[in-house]
Length: 334
Ligand SMILES: Cc1cc2nc3c(=O)[nH]c(=O)nc-3n(C[C@H](O)[C@H](O)[C@H](O)COP(=O)(O)O)c2cc1C
Image (cartoon, rainbow, N blue to C red; front, side):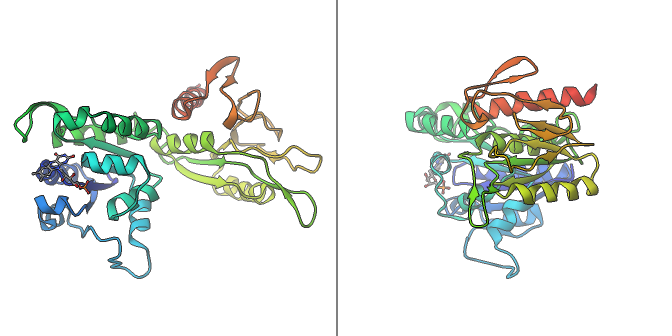
């Protein structure tokens, strides 16, 4: 498993298990880097993580070791997967609310890699309505969870709240990166997200209202499936048409997901999907897309869409993205 795993360790009694997790992941061939919260450092000295990961341990957002990069952005981009283990009730609350007040939470907001959360806490904390609410919110935002197991908790209670065993977490990570679950490994996917604008005249542009939620979900899912994703956001349609030609030259197997809204005017240039695999969303294009998804309004604002005559709900963008990708992959197999 030659993958970069970033482990964010927050301050619960299970921090000692996170040391074993780093060891197991490293033995499985992963490159591991660790960020610790201030509370996590109350439980275990960073040196243990440094020795196990053979990498520096990060805990101070303002300690910029390398002046050529900004550490939290660099780490966020470096990671193929981020694990938050153990995840305290506190860090879960911060993540659910977009709070970025330390190195771990700041990096978590800056990443586009898949993030898995492994909660570990007292059973009453885990059952608390506030924690449940935060977990539901994170699930809706597309985070994945490694559920805590049941058993004897350090606080003396027996119940759900134990951090899953390091061997089990490592097995889940290995499975995630296996070819079976990463069918888009080595593939380049270009995803247009949000509205792309076109010039109205020399001084004005016209740009549709778009929130980009569906395009973002499709891009996230492509990453989770192992693809190298190029995300084009809210830019100029003309620029994108130029760039697409370059992507086609670099990789003739490139797959285009054209999810961005484009204003339909007389002057709107058409995207050429000639000679490449493309999925479009009711957009007029030059050439034959492999799949064209139709919806009554812009896909971002629609509740359902039509995919090869089948009606699919779009209210949960993550769910929609998974369904669409499974269609595309089935099409690829044929
Ligand atoms: C001995 C001890 C054990 C703790 N264990 C947990 C735990 O398992 N889960 C949890 O959510 N909080 C636990 N806490 C509370 C957290 O450390 C506390 O909420 C802290 O603010 C979390 O900070 P962090 O999320 O930035 O790491 C524990 C605190 C102490 C003193």
